[in-house]
Length: 84
Image 1 (cartoon, rainbow, N blue to C red):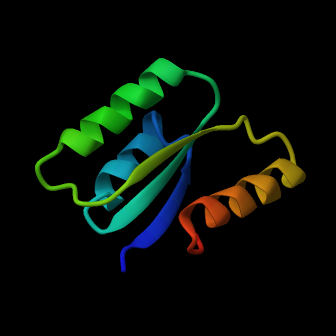
Image 2 (tube, one colour):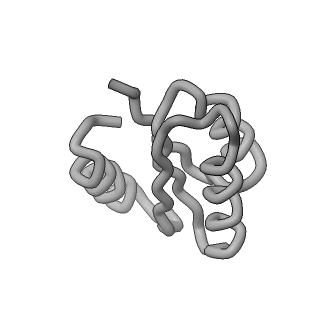
């Protein structure tokens, strides 16, 4: 079973780099603040990569405060039916 990585800022900058380095071994839950177009383009890029065999899901969430992080992690764990 593939492990699941939750990456905040997962569609740009350091988060994007982390996603690219982990996508061969992990399914990816990528969190982004608001740029839906960029997030969907990056998801498409990963899924079309020849070496990617996993799943990618996008989560639009600005992560304002501890409670929003708790809610996000709970949603991701439920959506994927496995822990981050």
